[in-house]
Image (cartoon, rainbow, N blue to C red; front, side, top):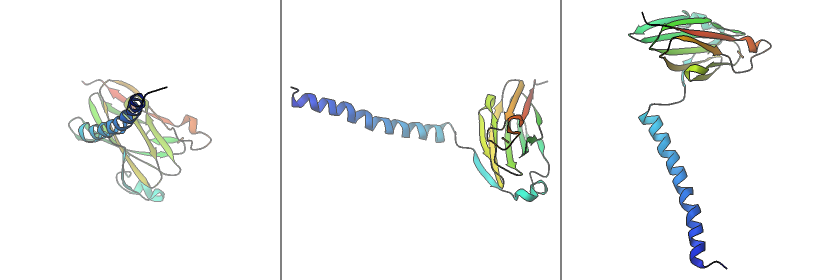
Length: 162
Ligand code: CUA
């Protein structure tokens, strides 16, 4: 037979972690969001999917050098390719991707660069990544978008700094 004190300690052993856990998660959330600046890829605006190539920034697809070490990429996803299929930036660059879809839902995943967004027609996805090391970074569509979904890919080529 357990004494009253033992039961109280067991209760405490459950109650304290169940308070500490959500408090810890909230602190982790605040630190990552406000301290480390980590946040979800944002909705950077809307665009008419039927006239997407007439509207900036998708009237000029590809890479733009915007500041030292900073590049902007506007990219269009459609069945079953990314346009442009290949982009080149020098090592040590921060790349701001603006991606939208012309037709159905696609994915925009760069596994080696921690980029993972859904690409919805009519919506502009904005995501940024830093490319430190030279090499090839595959871009993969990871939302099922039709019969040739599995071949829909592109790449970021990071060139050594000259
Ligand atoms: Cu595009 Cu799957």
